[in-house]
Image (cartoon, helix red, strand yellow):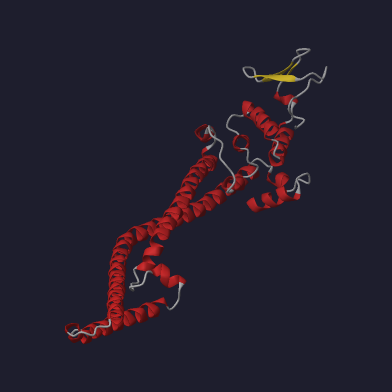
Amino acid sequence: MSKLYPHFCGTCGSQLILEKKSSIFVCISCGNAYDYDYFPEDSLIDEAEHSLRSGDFVSARMSYSYILYREPNNCLALRGHLLCDLEAKYVSNLIATEYEFKPGVLYDYYMEESSTQFRNFFSDIKFLSELKDKRVRLEKKLEDSKKNVDQISDFLDPYKTRAKGGWVDEAVTQTKKGIKITQLLCLIIATTALILSILAMIAYAPKLKGDEIDFTALAIVIVAAIISIAAIAYFISAFTAAVSRTAEAKYIVTNNNRSYLRAEISLTEVENALEETKDLQKIVMNRAADTERRILIQYGVFEKVNENPNLDDSLQKEQRALS
């Protein structure tokens, strides 16, 4: 924690507390009072900026608060205090995918207290929070839209295969290649057997009037005829059922294709809206970063922040990215 908070009495070393009404620090042990002149403002600002960049938001917030007690419209302190509220070291952190804006931040307060020159900085931060909320909603909607497209696609895939037609069920066709030719050959054989059976029965007709009848051969002919009729009936019913399934599949595909196209259009719209939001986030972030740089320059801490040897490499890289 920063040495600036808590402050300690120069006489007894006890902790000092801030009296808000009088804006002075009072020792809790000996009662000595200290005003802001006791704490150099430049040092206070430097320590606040260092605490912020180091991620010590508690110390940084308290240091910025001390500055704001003396100068309520100090844009540097307002901007630092806001970043502490958001628990963000840099403006660039605010558009990171994993960053979540803290609820209950009083953006309007910061805009009202800041000077007109830098008011757009605080409005941009508020806008970034709104864009992040929109981005979260769009990402959730995008996930739902993808699921919807996948569900419709999974539903239609088997019907698309069946809608291609054919008198052999698509499942059989997919598992046994050449089954159509086999079925066709079986149908030809059954038809041929039926025709031969009918011819044989016609040939046996005159013999029925005579005395010599080969009942075994006649029975074989009749059984062959019955089997042939049954086989032909099976193939005809299979063909009729396949045609019916094909027609049904075509109807389902045609009607559900409209839903699929609508789902794809919705998905594309969500994807475009999400990309536009991301691009707008970058634009607003760059604009806010530029305004922040001007605030730092105006208050004379820009070079100190950018050239602070105490900052680690990663923080220096992020700071250089802002500039």
